[in-house]
Image (tube, rainbow, N blue to C red; front, side, top):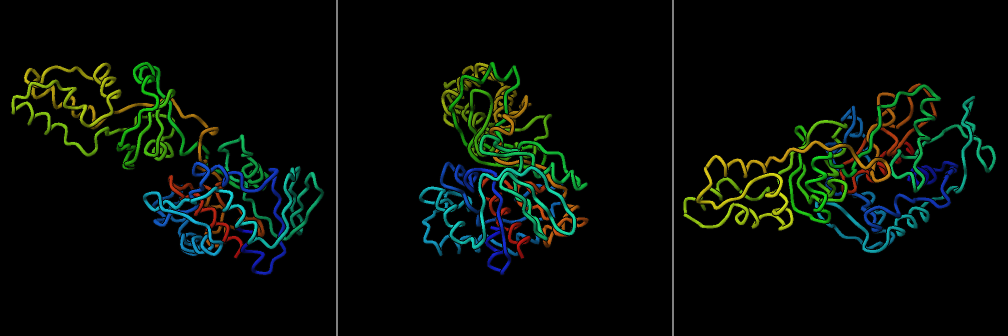
Length: 370
């Protein structure tokens, strides 16, 4: 995107791509359909040590701008939910669109061995030496190393004395502690609508039990805010006023068991595991009011402390990165190294799940190219 915009503005451009093909993360995104933007993009959808940094770039290149490009190339797309736009066909259509728009040179399979700066930038590669007055680093973060992710951006930043906000995996499944692993490992494959929260951040979407822990959109969202310790809070029945319902059914002298009443709101396997490990079940008529309230509270305010995450191998993004205080929010240029720019995931701007990280990539690239 940076090369497209710069070349359209009359700049001579060269993209050095270390993979054998460009856009590998685009190709695997969105289950192979590429969730290429989100129509509801706003600064609140991003994490950063400086929450104001992304505002300028996002305001100057909006989802509508990328959608116009998609429409120009007659790529069919649809909104899945919550403003998330996906290709109807394969994600390769987005890569092909970008390649068709690009007017400069592209060298794939180019291993960079050194970067120096004198009066201009000198990049030594396996394909030879290249020189330019401006150098844009758009090499991403540490997530998904099997498709080529490396710490290149951070290593180069350190070489030029640029500060880095500590990184961690984001949009990543969380793993069970030993106690919860024993209780819930058998639920792998069970999915349910839930509200998952950490601090003041709350996300409501599907939660998925896995062999190793918890995943699904609601958990992935919270994972970006979880910093390696402390509990997360889960409401397993966000639409059901469980306490009110249990007390009402008790007052109506229903002969049903507590677990039977609860099973109306949860998958059966989850109900079974819950009343095996987390709560006792007995006939509603025999249960004390205090007991029913405790069951309801346990399901609405389930607190778990993850052991960790599944790491960069399964993380969709990297949280942290190049310190935004080092960059101009207008141009993405390094303040103390004129001509050097960092854009995209390598910067300490991380979007929520749902197309926001692609929109940041397009917007930050556009800002640097301008």
